[in-house]
Amino acid sequence: MSNKGFSRRNFFQGVGVAALAGLGATTLSACGQGYAAPAPTNERRGDFGAPSWLGAPPEVAESDITETLECEVLVVGVGTGGIPTIISAAENGAQVLAIDRQETAHNVREDIGAINSRLQQSSFEEFPEFEIDKKEAIEDIVRYANGFIDYDLVKLWANESGAMVDWLTDIIERDGKLVMEFEGSVGTTGQGARDKAWATGHSPQKTDLVGEDEEWGFAESMLAYAAEQGAEIRWRTEFIKCEQNDSGRVTGVIARAVDGDRHYIRINASKGVILSTGGYGNNLEMMEDRQAWNQKIRIAAPGSGGNPTGDGIKAALWLGATMDPLGAACTFNRACVKPDQTAGDGVLGRWFWFGEQPFMKLNLKGERFCNESGPYDYMLHSAIMQPHQTYVDIWDANHAEQARIMNEVGCCRLFPFDNGAKNNIPMAAVDGMIEGLIEAGYVQQADTMEELAEKLNLPVETTVASWKHYNEMAEAGEDTDYFKESYRMMPLNTPPYYGVRTGAWFLATLDGITINTNMHPCDENGDPIEGLYLTGNDSGGFFSVSYPNLFTGLACGHTMTFGRRAGMLAATGQA
Figure 1 (cartoon, one colour):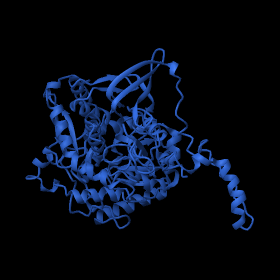
Figure 2 (cartoon, rainbow, N blue to C red; figure 1 turned 180 degrees about the vertical axis):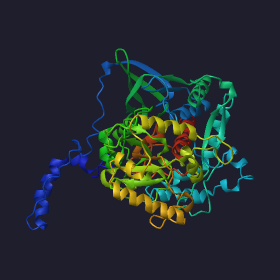
Figure 3 (spheres, one colour; figure 1 turned 90 degrees about the vertical axis):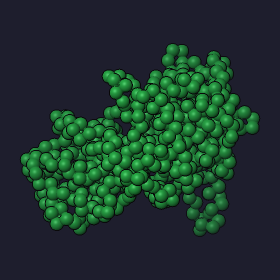
Figure 4 (cartoon, helix red, strand yellow; figure 1 turned 45 degrees about the horizontal axis):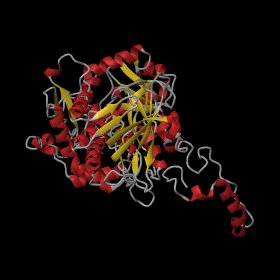
């Protein structure tokens, strides 16, 4: 059994590693010229052949369960996936309870990827290039994943995401405090881009009615609406495990109070339990086991988040569900370390929003090593192949104008979108960030490339040679080394020069439990586990290998689309 994609219900569960070792010694020797293979050793396998991060379901004595709650639909996790799920279930008539171990919603994503929303469709007359061929889009997502995904789940997003955004738009615009904007841009077309960009992004923006209220935003608007629909949320309540009846149907969960006496709670959910606990990015043992390569480029950059530790995934596996065969994550090349540091799990660095801009990037030997354009993690995957999995971004005094010409899309765009929609962070704010990173000793500034190389601890001669060669190609209008688009090949010849050591800012894990189109987790036979639904990064089958970030907001759009569907199905009992 592999410790990557697996089910607990397998051969190892019944036999055990020790028994298999004996079987190998007695049986295999008959056809192996007397050689007996040694017993396998793997420190990450637990007692049942499963990885040690999985363990066994916690045992909770009945006498320790001192509170019982009843509901029809229980949602575990109040975040990007959980909030739309709560609303959908409540709108469809269910008595909804949600729990979360935090005291409020954190880091709810606001770039929402969809196809054929009303906002999107209304732009086609002026911007026909924004129109999306669903078949082509679906095939591109499958291609990013090298086929390691469920085609039907991608089709589901393509068919239902536009209606989901329309639904959210009506919710958040109900009181005039927010407006949904379509992020209309596909970058610069017809100039030899290797990777196609898709105009799928939507973002809520505050109106003047919000005033100076910094506490009001997308999450607050949706949670207020959920309360209007009668949904209840119990904060500071952590999920422990699911419960099943004799037929195997999930009937509820065991939870625990985070504060006070830490008592256990049984929550019965007559119509269904929906898990949306947020993946496993902060379970370091699980990360090392499932995607050690991403740990090599990871820089711990302080920021807000939900601290996901794989609780939902483990709970489903304990019930006999299966998991994606490959680990995957959404990683941004937007974290940096100081000149005497390299990337890697455990290294504390800083957020570096400017890192996605495709300026010249060198490895720690001072050599350019890839096409700097393209999806976020393509750059980072190339860096995994370089010394210490760390590289250096270099730009000059003309960086603002050059970034405008580079014309990035999605959340890393520094200027308004082609249709006038606001971008996430403006160039002026990014310049302020860069100044802060200079003061903190991360970004280095110099009047010559020789001085910059020294400050970054790069080989001076090689770095200068790489820089001169890059400028020569830029002047000639062609990247003969790595074929970057000509309009993004601009000379770096105006001091001061800037540079910083870069790695991955880790957004989320993307692999999860195998689900069907009804959002039920499936066992090794492909049969659903009734009464249980998964959404968000607890669920799998949609992403693998790389994140298709040129579909702006795809992760968030997929999560919210599936959350809406899960809430409806659980509330109505359709599946």
